Length: 186
Image (tube, rainbow, N blue to C red; front, side):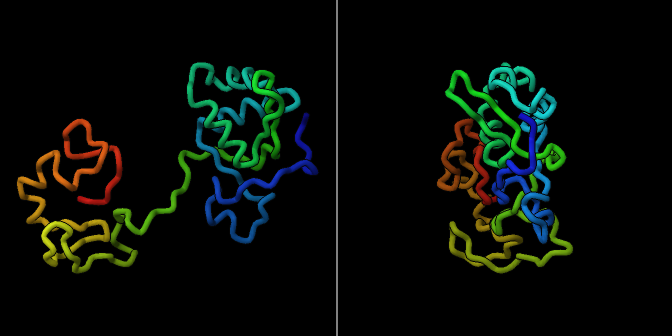
């Protein structure tokens, strides 16, 4: 089943589109961004005869036969309106739902940074440095950014440097004082 513009679905514009791309552009004309792995799945389907394949054949053709994350990439492509899965689980078929020219490969998705993220570059943007209260001792100190909430004196105390300090987030299993979570506390 080849793609025809009359059958175009409307993808969720909040997923995989950079803000600059969606300004003044209809969702049918905007580029859909895919990182390398989902793009490999898309490309295998786009190159298939009729732009449709059985689920397991697509998994093999995209080079993901031994990868456990394949269903997540399928879900991402479905959420973006790129593909559609049809049929029961064992006989599932995957078909392409957008014009392949609308899909572009990117290294990584553009992220919207949180106001609590540590700034990459203070120059050119407004500075968030100001006096803040330390969450540990309640004294006022010069904080360089919004996520810096523990003063330098408190960070030098044995309680702060102990791997089991109260400010160590849950999930710190190696005793390094760091976790897999991004805490914003430095």
